Length: 351
Image (cartoon, rainbow, N blue to C red; front, side, top):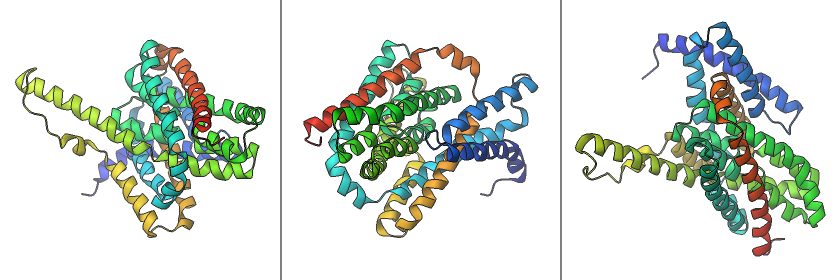
């Protein structure tokens, strides 16, 4: 069914604002590649949102429908496009060697995010976003997980800020560490690909070390993106169990009726299915390899637009209430992932 004209008219102002901020942020990211577009989009969006709220007494007014559309639907479509960068052949060729390292860093990161997050009294959705953002692929993972767990804009903005801080530190610290440890080009590429978050920062970090390190890091990073799939499916399953438990309790009391196994499958997000379809199309050649950079650019821009909208809708009061603990959690996870990456390479004979 086609959207009604009133619905389109309602979405247009906020969506236009998000696109405009996304364009500006993309220009900033082009000029300063280490920063990329998504983080400036959040920052600029947050400033614009703050100014708008001051003008409209704490409300986004007519911008609200379009901002909500951009932060949800646009973001989900961007995740679908990310699949064009990968084929099953690339996964089999590179993943066989680096999968143990990637799984080690991911498990350590997620377990630490849960444990340290609880210890630091960080909310469940926020520690999940910081965990997947650090353990998988920064903004892309946060984009994929946000609609599944229903994270609020303040949590997304805080997670993005934490990831950004660690990415900047990695660009300066990791090459020095690599030279101090005498890492080969290949070993450093695996290190950068598994321990740095966003693709732009992976490329920036590895480029400082060398061309071969860059080539390895990019492939490892793209394969690492596939970790989004089991994580999102797992989170969808957890949400399904919570929903089923709530429905049973509401309908029949705590002893409720049987839960449906197929609830999990009904809760698998459409954009995750779309992501898998695009990967398959890339594998069988319907989407040629030459088209992958274009899809990647489009996906990055759409994520930038979505994060601009998230920035606009950010509640600074909620950010202040979150305190320093989430940032401390993100830094601790970043250090743990880096140490685990090097340790796993040593154990599996890749150094």
